Amino acid sequence: MKKKQSQGAYLVIKEVLPRPVLAGKLAGDADALKLQAAVARASANASPVVLDLAGIQALSSSYFASAFLPLWAGPRAPGALPPLLANVSEHVIDDVRLAVEANSATVWIVRWAQGAVNEPEVLGKLDEFDRQALEVAIAEGQTDASDLFGRNRTIGLTAWSTRLGALHQKGLLQRRKDGRRMTYAPPWKD
Amino acid sequence: MHSIDTLEFVLAERGPAGLQAVSGLSAVEAPLSTAIEIAAVRWGRWRETGEDIAPALPLHSAIAEWGTLLSAQSGSALFSLLGVQVGPAAFPAVADGEVCDVPADRKEWEAGRPFILFQERFKTALRQHGVPSELAHALLGAFSEMASNAAEHAAAPIPAVASFQTSPDRWCFSVTDVGCGVVESLRRNPAYATVPDARTALPLALQHGVSGTGKPGRGTGFTTLFKALIDRRCTVRFRSAGVAAACTATSPTAATLAFLVLPPRTGFHVAVTGDYPQK
Image 1 (tube, rainbow over the protein chains, first blue to last red):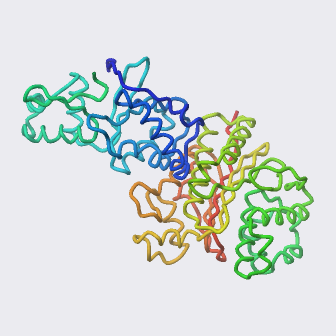
Image 2 (image 1 turned 45 degrees about the vertical axis):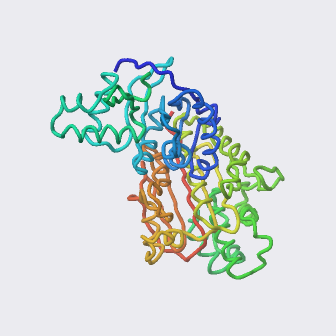
Image 3 (image 1 turned 90 degrees about the vertical axis):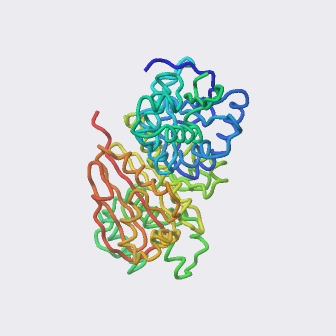
């Protein structure tokens, strides 16, 4: 996957929560406000915020659900995008996935290096059409309902439009108005 | 060596004085987690009988008493009461381990520096015995998860205690509370309100996604524990209400546990003992 440039804000989790093991619901509850405050500060001038998990060696699903998931579930300002998770280690990814799926959430995870997004992937339950829409948006930089309908006519134009709207509501795609047309792009795309 | 269940039987049926009279008990080599489990039973009986409960209010007082008794019986220095203080309270110092109160609620976790430092010392002890960083962090995560579970679900009148111990040939951690136990905890969830007894409740509670909270996405704590033990040779023991579940296996899971019905007791106890990876 080629690199995608991003201008979002950047937060190193290990600097906000300075310990390598994050586990337990109560510890997550205790850290949630600290994390939300840090994200609010970082997102004051840029969105989405990239949460860099490099160096976090253990992260239990109950901790993630109580400390991190409110960042996706809570209300967002108009135009604001939920965070991206970056550099999630192989020791941690299964627990994050468990928490995301158990709570019916959807979260972008990416590799992040030198301000560029690599290997984007969505954790959470999506069907084949949602995944196709995201793949096209990543590959082309943006997409719209007509584009997707032209590629796959298994569902109709309106259904594609509805799906793109839902992906936008989940914060997985940003929406822009281009004349009478709505286009959708990955959150990190300028 | 006497099993924890033998010790508990002696305690339940004959009291501490009876322990003195049991033949061969001088051979007891109780790890710290066993002494804590026995102490928790003793604490529950103090509470049930109203027998001079004042000195037993903190669980670590009971631990200290049993440590002293077991040390005297065994002639060993498993528990050293030399006055070294660790953790937020005056716990007995142990030759190669520590005991610490578990922060009781969110506010205590926010201010929970002593517990974080206690966990850090467990990690350091593991690393000093050659445990790879990846495994040390996974065990620490499981340990923290069990501690959080106890604090959240026990509804106990006193804090749970967590312990770790590292000897030259094995590591161990335990978390013990004297709260409501697995049956009552699970029954808070309407889906499990009719769980009849501990023999039914304990295996259920250990399954992924089962929780007394009834909230979606909860009930993952034991999944985190078992995940940390994948490909590890270890002994896992759970004890709550009238049942114990234990097994010694590589990659233990809820399905590999053997269940044993025992006299009822308060609270919940989990202990994990493992070998060090081959160098």
